[in-house]
Image 1 (cartoon, rainbow, N blue to C red):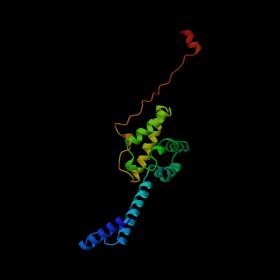
Image 2 (image 1 turned 90 degrees about the vertical axis):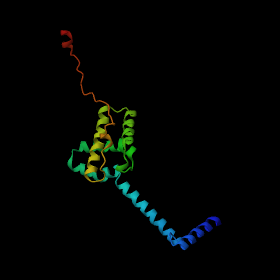
Image 3 (image 1 turned 180 degrees about the horizontal axis):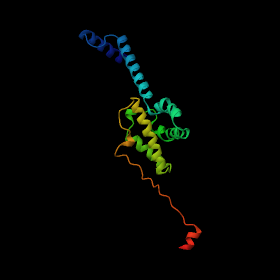
Length: 169
């Protein structure tokens, strides 16, 4: 509008008189363009440092050459079904305890056992440790924090009596 144009012109004229700040529209446009480019670069770097990007670009291809097929397949399933839907393109430095809690809540809602939860968070911890070794993060994995608790796994098996043993009793 006319008012906005006049205010911009007045501001540029004051900058010209004081010798500080931008004095032309061209300078403002260049500064705005540089700022947008910097933000875009930061977004790209953050996306490259995200959990999913690291897993699919670095960890998973390496795992295919050094561990059993069943192991890296299970890890990929854990990431695809449980971890990635929560973390999405979140950079490692922004993944928090809240993300781990949300993953656990999703597992509980789906009726997954305590052992499955343990496996999913073990996979997450292994990927996180690899990211630390690659220098993508220096933070501790949220699943390793004291306040993060998983349900106890009951590993005991029940044995039923055979017919012969039942007769003896």
